[in-house]
Amino acid sequence: MASRSSQISRIPQIAQIPQGVGDVLEGGSPFGDPWQGVDRERLARAVREQVARPVAGVDDMASYLAAQVADISHREVVGPLLDGGGASGVVVRRGAVIASWGEPGRAEMAYSATKSVLSLVAGVAFDDGLLRLDEPVSDSVGLPQFTDSPGRAITWRHLLDQTSQWEGELWGKPTRVDAQSTREGTESAGGPPGEGWAYNDVRVNLTALALTVLLGRALPDVLRDRIMTPIGASDGWSWHGYDTSVVDIDGVRVPVVSGGAHWGGGLWISALDLARIGQLCLREGVWGGRRVVSRRWIEELWTPCRVKPNYGLSWWLNDDRTVWPSAPATGRCARGNGGNHLLWVDPARDLVVGSRWGADVETLLADVSRAVAPGG
Image 1: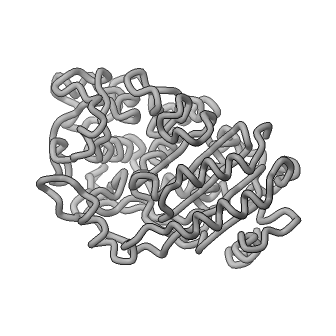
Image 2: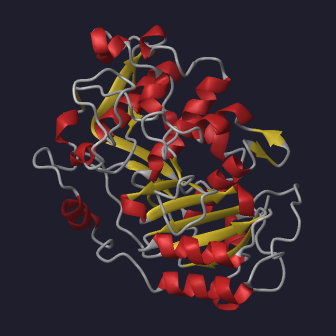
């Protein structure tokens, strides 16, 4: 395998998109000419305009996060923070990088894009026969959060598609304080699991806790061994929890990661490594001819939630064009901080876009999609 520095040096910079193929993410599996059906000038213009739309203030993450969180209480940050390095990203077509900007190899906080990676790790447990989506979590893990009447009815699907409606406190943060929960108006307060949907980081953190206990290992170790190493990711990513987020497993204190950066922590990853994850999903769980995640699990990730049809298992689905109205209905995405962190996967165009700390990503997606003809 080529060194990380040589990989980065071969990524074509958008100022001069080369005529040839750029850095091939998935070696050993040719998918055809990545430039076929691509309007080079339109692509170059789309990326130049994105470079000019950096998110302001991210070089001081503590101040930035404080301004972002709308919670009326429990606002204190309890996990580590990483100052941002500015707008960066990659466009991948047929497995090859055809455009990049900024520092695509620099790790950045992924914010809620972490949730989609968490659901991918759940696929490891699914493929190993440890997790059955529609069975109660209490059947496989012995955590107190799942022992009362509503808790016993929560399934793994409920956790992963954010319909658990669990109420409680975890790592010092009560579910009720997360202002995100009420923004969609789709939660059925006090209702049973599966009957309402809410974007709640405390509940996602409960998912991370349950998966840690189920797998018996820290989730970053599982992610590294089962996904990131097989897809050739760098060693520059990391995944963090909170100061107090640990669980005892057979007498060993195991750290538990967070599913976002609402109170710090979460996945820290580069645009290039994020694109590799997108490429894995685009190829239905296969990398370089090797099965990494089952096709069935990728299908589950992108199956619409009954009470929130534009959401799957922690992935956003643009089928009805309600996530990004100007972007194609064929796209799926992991997004964080209102889209300032984005992983876009469009199977119809054999296209992956990773964008970090760039504003107005809907325009980026629309412009790039117009530059790349559908048809794979």
